[in-house]
Length: 393
Image (cartoon, rainbow, N blue to C red; front, top):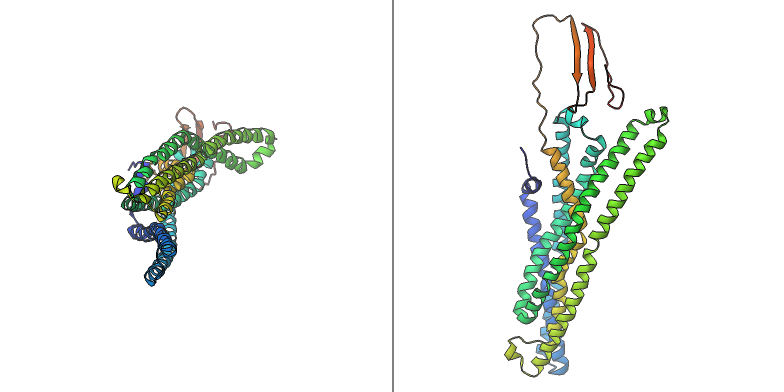
């Protein structure tokens, strides 16, 4: 059955609903606890301000103690459920990776010899080892950022609008700049990353084949030619890899620059609102602002931008994993070799004759030509054929 890359990946994910849901619940608890903490910090700052500048009494002191106690509980919940989240996601991803490796190895044993021989052994090895590890790294980064990102963005957004809709709207207006920056860099790096993955497979195939035929290479004094072939391909990989790494690493500093600009704009607008609130003009704007509000919003601006920064920082891993999953999926979509079983003959066979036999793995490139041989009953014959040797005639 032919499957698309994302369809097959989703099928692996769907096999483990317990880890999927439990890790989501843990993410909900620790992210919401994290999001509430800046709100409590702002409230504590306002309470301390009231104690110092307005009125020193037991009511404010009791309120401050309650706020501190609640913040400690939030910190404990964050630590506990974040640990559980990391643990569950780790098991979840390792199970998926193991199943992909198992299926890939099984498929390699079920496809036709024609498929194995018509593909570089080093490239096939690369798909079983390197590509599956790339998928593992991408799944870990992707799930962590996906879960945390969606919950953190939505919960932060709701609280920001409840506190001060003007500042919340300011943050939202500035957010698309991050999307634009990440998308632009991702679009340019995708091509280079796919080329890098392809070149890695070619280089691996050269290394594996040279190691397998090291005796032949030495016998024919082919060392320099083999090294030059390796060096040429390694230079190609270096060139493509350098471009892929350079372009992908532009995302994180670009988004951080935009975030720092956003903090400055939010702080400026918050300062204006704070000044208006002191003059009782905030009713016109419909949004009050205090010192605690400014502190809270600076933290929320950081939290709101954090998912975009984290996704951009691991964008290279995710794209590499997608490219690797595509290569693995190509193998898994191959048809299994048809096994017609054994044929039972009810009569005695004295000999097996080959007359003018032609054989090839690739159409148009014969490995055996005009092969003639007679094998008598009871005899054993070992026939070795090398593709890089002269054709057997």
